[in-house]
Image (cartoon, rainbow, N blue to C red; front, side, top):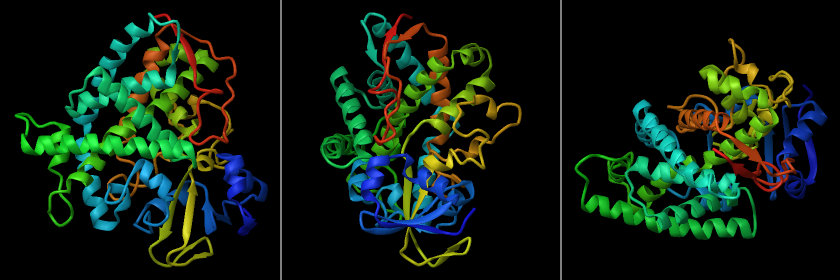
Amino acid sequence: MSTLSHTTGDATLAFLTEGYLFGQNRFDRWRTDAFRCRLAGRRVLMLRGTEAARFFYERERFTRQGAIPRSVVHSLQDEGSVQSLDAEAHRGRKQQFLEVLDVDGRSLLVRSFESAWDDATKHWQKASSISLLPAVSEVLTRAALRWAGIGASRNDIASRTSEFMAMIDGAGSVGPRNWRGRRLRRRTENWAAGLIERVRDAPPERATVLSEVAQWRDAAGDLLTRDVAAVELLNLLRPVVAIGRFIAFGALALHVHPQWRDHVIAEPTARMAFGAEVRRTAPFFPLMAGRARHPLSWHGTDIARGDHVVIDLFATNRHPDEWSDASRFDPGRFLHGGADTRRIVAQGAGDMVDGHRCPGEPSTAQLLESAVLQLARSDWTLLTRDLHTDLRRIPALPGSSDLNVLWVG
């Protein structure tokens, strides 16, 4: 690859115009894995590749504090939550997430999802058509609440689904979509804070995910404040609903590649491979930003303390030197000792315990595999004609405006 390249002027407008392809266009044009640019007035080093992802995510080299735009922070995280912490405080909080999302916790979540899916499809069959992303998001909301031990009425589920979807959809935008997500998030936080208060006042006879989160403590051993505990509860629930985007892109992939249906139904390894290829190719959140905690060097490029570094997740998952025929959807690459699924960086890279790789990644993979199986063995017809995905929109929608589906059974 070539030496470090630079853009001239502020590239914010170009990023908003090109969306997911902003980084990839420049990496490919300059045949480099690193370039500098200005985004929103900040001098940024953009990186791609699995080695760069490990450099970014491992060994506490970078902090998220002051690196991620406040519009994103207040859409998805908030001060005091796990993603805002560093070093030992981050590792301790991450361990609490991993304990909730252990093998038993993931199995319970998948069973809850499959039960909610079965219930939903009975209603989908009676409808003239369904909009797949909202429909699947409601299934995931119902499953997540049941898994967490949170009772909810039909109206509660509808409200939480709308709120979680708005947070996710608004995080990658500026303007009205972001403002709506942040406004609805405040309502969701008030709901979650109320749950934390009630379960602390009257703990259940049997522990639930909700009651466990209510008793989480910080690095000093103090009980998390009500508001921080509420945010962490949302950080367990909202990402489950976000998997709806992977599921919708999985449905689109099954429509475009119907020859995989029988493989997915008959072979668990094919199910895994298909889900992995969806996670590699589906446009999810394109970037992650950090600030250097101390002076660093990346292949001869000096990074000063406090410098902003961005890892391009979208471009890394499509690196032409790391993925054979990277733009092609091919689950076969993950079969028979092929590509390692750990190279997929949609949810971070490196070690899950000590680094910033998402503790929900195994749950995501299992839920997506289950959903792909349900989709493969069901009878449905895609009514949407324009299947083009607009990569200028972040986060992207499958097809021109979600997928309109006639569900037969």
